[in-house]
Image 1: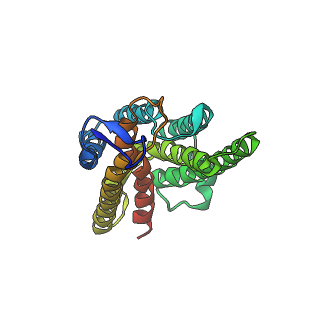
Image 2 (image 1 turned 180 degrees about the horizontal axis):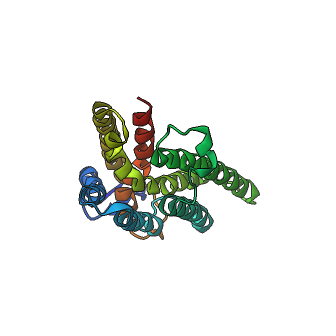
Image 3 (image 1 turned 90 degrees about the horizontal axis):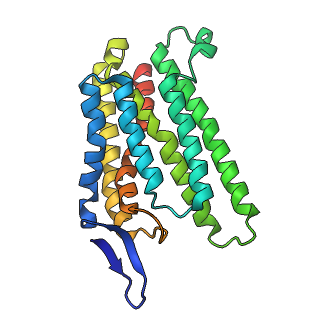
Length: 240
């Protein structure tokens, strides 16, 4: 069990996982692996959207963060808007197409998606801060604010995985193949770094006592947080 008790205190620390915390990184890799399988298997955006939605829902239901029901709702709404934007092309490149005719449409869509989610992040921070300041009792204000923002960032960034086929197809769109390989390696290394960090998150977690399987939320968190690296790598590859 990924759980221990602080010395000298009757306080349980950890997410209560049914496995030792040192295995968390391995399970995080397992959570991310279907995204690669679906991409190389030609499942397209629909297949990626299904698994991404599964990961997002798992995190929403099993969140290890202490930001209350309101915080969960705020983050979930932001994540859903980001998902809809990434899957439906709601934020498209059309409105700035005339400004950059030499930019591939797929890369342009990722640029405008970044602009849109940047706006979502600003709204998330403002709403989260206003919510905390409106509380009559402002104990644990920093923790509550940071947990809401972290949850929102994870859910807003998760739909970025829908752009993974664009990164894989970058060489066909004129990007340098070596650059794509190097950038892909960087993305993998950063994901591994987050997965390894999840070992510590699992061991030191202090979820709400009513949280449902918070260990599962920690397992999927590295995948959600690393999602934004995909369109970023695609855009950088297009500029090299």
